[in-house]
Image (tube, rainbow, N blue to C red):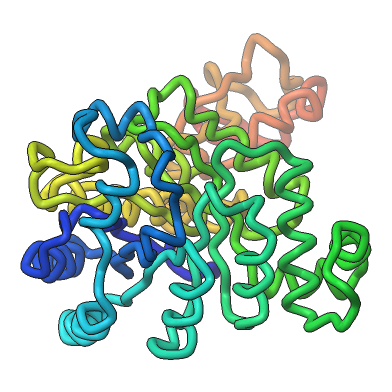
Length: 359
């Protein structure tokens, strides 16, 4: 049986740069039943140029009076706070995760915090140096694939396989592709990488979600798949589980009306709890893919199936025919599948109306 779906509460930058909010997000994630709560680790001056514009959704949520750099600078989490959040997560029984957006942040998460797994953003799927450094850490990687083509994903997986195998050759696209195409490269990717389908829009309209792409990703790359959701409700993540997603990531906020770039695309704690419960119910309903009668069905089968019975009184020596045979509940006698075999045979004894037929 598969492990339960791994549910990540994406706190992201919904702490608004405030320690107290960050701690409350951890508590809310734990109470809502999440397996992990994930933040974002970055140095604004290593992440974004000062001239970089905000994304349209960021402007919509936070206005245009500050640059993307200025906005992100206020949302950095200090190293001490990271350590405190790790401890707070341990206290509340939820795993701490964070997405690194630059090499320095990655090295901090790996070397100082020793995170058990890494989550890489859709925006960094073409950031080969960060992908390679992440692979060198040799721990499970959740790779988001928003805004990508299959070719771009394949190239990113080539970088990861090259790094996971600790290849000594010069890092370049030719060697990445060679690594990806090798059996050992495919094997190490299956061991370490989960590929997350994602639509990078905040909020993402349902018609843009394309959950059928989960099947495409699974078929194309042979990897475990998950889904990082940016829609406003819970329909998409629950449906993703029904399509085979083994990881679900969803933004969590304490209040959707708070200022900040991602609050509007997030679930509040009560809503997140409903999503978690719905996912767990969906998992129960998914079963194990075998088509066999359940124990409950076996109790009902005799009651609702039919048997061959006499349509009227039948005398000994009379031939069975379409006129003197019929099919009625319960199914404790000869199956109607034997109807044509019975036709023309001679009754070896008499039968009363509704009595099960024996041949």
